[in-house]
Length: 374
Ligand SMILES: [Zn+2]
Image (cartoon, rainbow, N blue to C red; front, top):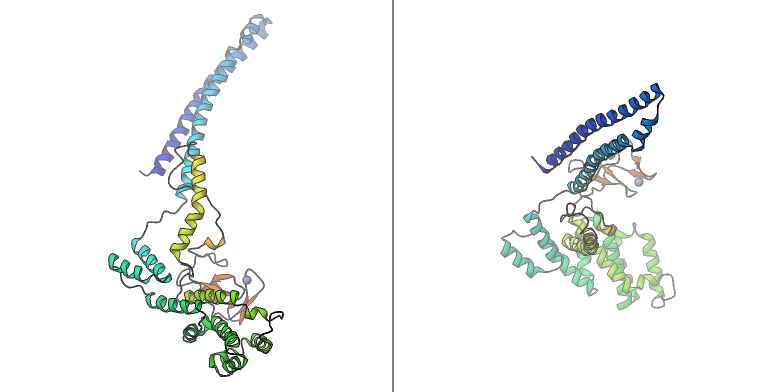
């Protein structure tokens, strides 16, 4: 028998006791009431209330009723306490207990080390755990070398990397890299070098149509160089902001290209632990002396630690109310809302576009980006 069944049975026993006690109590109370009624009626029939006055004055029957009621309430109160105890414990059952999978943990640590460029520690972990090479090894080796270059304000390796990857994911990054390249050329080699690059670079030419407006602005700014400080183009030359932004964009796009999170899972869990621990310790201190029954290692309280720590391991389609899976994955609509792929197919039917179920924005076609929940 498991704990829940035992606790359920204990409650049923309490209820049975209350039922029996109530039955006896009712009998006793009814008997006392009957006695009072009989005595009043007797007094009434002989029209002599002198003895009745004595009997009611010392209130023996009423004291008996009160006492019987109190006994009954004691049983009900005990049931209430047991239910409180069970209810509080049940909060823990609401928390899903996840067994720690050592293989998953090793993979996460391997990815974490590679992501941080800790290649030596990664190799040691492989040897000591007997684990296989991570499928991300090559990717992170390349990515780390590009990150190093970007930190030294060298763009060529990143541009080359983005040029050889899937255009759909890379377009935005590639344009930002090329834009920065033009700005850098203006700053280091002069206006002519920048103009030649814009004219001769085939990747830059390809970006022409999609980013025409930005390219025009950039070209205008080039001819103002170096007097851009007080113009509306000054942000293009703000190296302190632009380089970190490009580095972050690269990390984001690179992670996206591998269907992995931008931030390390290990670091996220560690940060969440650091943020929640002080509050948990405080909660533990407050509740320590209250009830030893309720306190366990799993404290069922919700602690708000910010949006960046909100993760969802599954997604329920707002249209079909079904949990999505690999056969029917969640897809991103143009407006940023998400529904399941099957729902998107049903909604578009034979039309060329359909309206988002949440907002008025229309999405064209059914070839929508799939979201992957990790
Ligand atoms: Zn929408």
